[in-house]
Image (tube, rainbow, N blue to C red; front, side, top):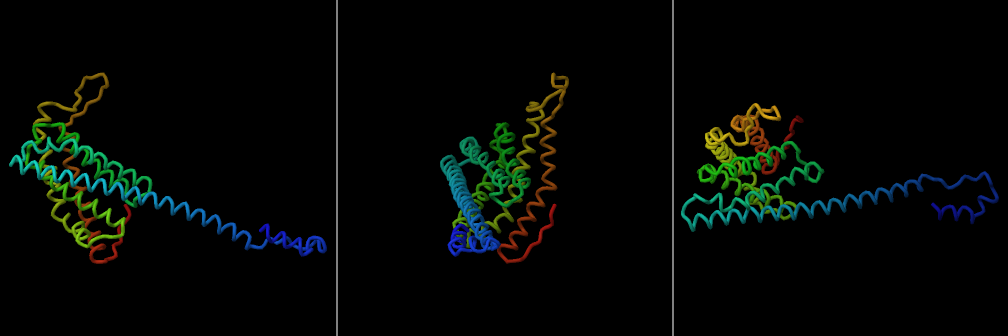
Length: 267
């Protein structure tokens, strides 16, 4: 625009014809707008590159973490020949990586990942609840077969899921990983839910006898809470939630593997 003003004065337009219009053509504003758009696009690309780099690192780390858990479980069983004591041997690593998954809720909240915050929050928090407030807190159930069942299912599911995300971000997704991601869940999801429910059911008698995490009246807070009934409500919540998650994955399976166009209703 300044270049055009110089040309306007050098041609004598401003001196010979005071009524001559200033060169405020739309092209000046268009160029300014184009520069702003370019700057905004550059900022978006930078943010997108940073987000992609972080998500790639995160998914590689989580894949590695669950692979470490898988190898630790196999090594323990080969050496001991029994599942008793297995949970305690991997408890610290399991708690770290499962708690670390809380970052996924932040990814959704920040818009880095286009997934529902509520759905992700429910899935992650239910896992953390199982680890910290059920299995870790009630030592009497740590050697139950149901604990090993959901641990094996979780490990297989997470290795598949995080490796799928990693290769997808790198734009080099092997078909067998995509196939595993959208086929293994058909068996693993029900088995995982069964293991979790059986574990909570096994914990109920110990919780009732000990009164752990419960508050009885009277107390200075004038609040009553029974952890025993809290666990029962938690178990009942699987009835409405599990079918929704399972059928959502079935719809995603049809879309990804078979190319079907799926229109989901807004809640």
